[in-house]
Length: 551
Image (cartoon, rainbow, N blue to C red):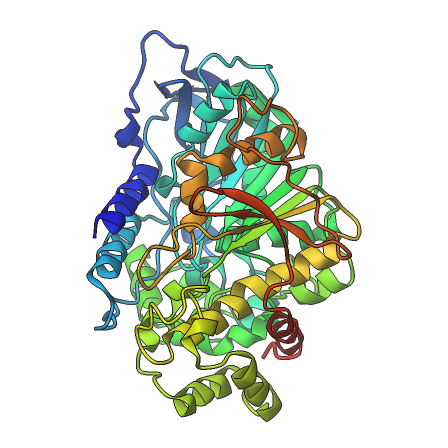
């Protein structure tokens, strides 16, 4: 119980600006000038901040379901001391929890959910950025910049749930000052419209285009905050990490000089196929509107109120794979996995990694799967008409709890007879296998570093759960130091002395021939170098079967 309570406190500490004393300061210069606009921010500790700055015109009315449009020049005076609204979120209700979860696990889940609930209220007018800088930075200083892209399954999330001040403050302590930027982007049915009509209208992957527009804003304005537009690292977790990887794939791998390095937690290009694969989900969304699928569907949707759009989103299908980025002929000209295979990837320094137990948070609604037969049926829904895949995965992911996730916990954490088996499969298919395929491919042509976080194994039923590694960055922790050095020098090993840093050992580059990774561990030995060869047969098969099963 105590462990979960401490962990939940850490989660809450990530999310609230007020928790670290954000305030307007009369003694520190917190006004920046953008065009003819005056933006008044605030300060906290060793940092200054500007929050909720619009980076695009509101995507409302006639601009709903259109690519983001750049702002007109700023003019007037703006208060920039509060986060802007979150973009519209898809709500699918509250799932019941498995009855066999321990009290510690239940407490953790409640805290985890509360962290999400505490984001700013949603509104369609949501395309804003936030900037956090060291306290004494001045325009023209040219500090390196890291741009954070949040996760949320492409159906939700907000820049208000993570506070970059701890990272910037730690960078100052390391004498490697950086600037932190975070952004909002559209998600769900408004950010990732699906189906043939979305292709015909050229409105696929709008959320990714929002991110691209925010990166253009950084190029135009970050020098006014003291940033260096030639040293921008994009960084994300989960859907945010997938977004980072797709920003590396679009435009034939040409970054347009918008960013120069990339760091990803638990996310890599997924084999999602063409945008028509989402047609059924799109129709489930339209069902709650008066709009029918056809050439005029987007004109119709632009006439609806925001409340009507929100209701339709909530009533739409909410499966994990429904509202994901897909090949649309514009932002993604081929399926993501093929772009990776063909080497159509930005050749920039890259960090990518996973937590050990990626799947444990994603099987809460699957507690009815309790037998081999039910597990096989579940596999048949993932790989219809592919008996070979079903039989092979049954062998590669056995029912023995000692082989499942949380990994390396023996028979412990067996919430249901198939819990650990499901968690292992889910995490590998969605996160670990795509990451391994991605880094194996890109490391042939660019500097690549890989990590695996095994911390928080003591958490009942969930272990090293999805997003637990962020506690080691926003905490801050030793991963913060590696991140700061990477943002500063495009190398996680350069930039601060061993006496200054918590990043105590050298992090080797990853290659196909020598797939070395840095492991973050609990216990006395906190860091160690290992090989990316765990679950070799299972992950190799996951990659192969997923590449050929994108329907």
